[in-house]
Length: 148
Figure 1 (cartoon, rainbow, N blue to C red):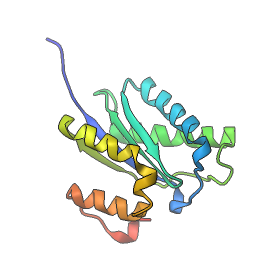
Figure 2: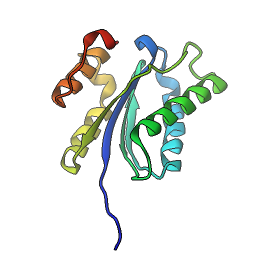
Figure 3: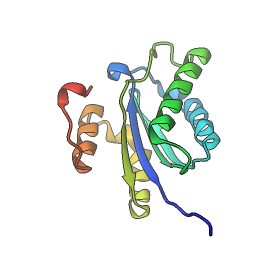
Figure 4: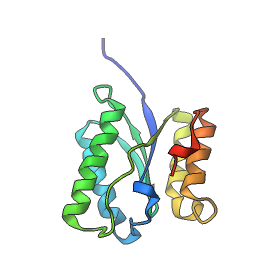
């Protein structure tokens, strides 16, 4: 008998100290690079987007892949690539933590639209406020002193 699964995540991670160093002109290159990492892990990217200080990824997670390793691999590889390609000269490193929120297929399209409209969305709300809202919506307890 075959195995079946549906494991969708909305992943959000930031630059160290929320530094606004990811300029929009190079984001497409970064997103394509991250897409390659995701494909190599046998996962499916549904959407990637972000702003000058953080990235959102909507991705399926293959059962052979551990979430923490998946995010670590994306952050480490993309950090090295950014520095080698020098596409964001002021970029130092990604922040240590991340947010990862499970999604149902019913929520997928709504969250994809949300991620697609990041630039417009962040004219009204900061990345920190957005992250707190995501944590609260998912019932995750947190200590604000550990947030950006």
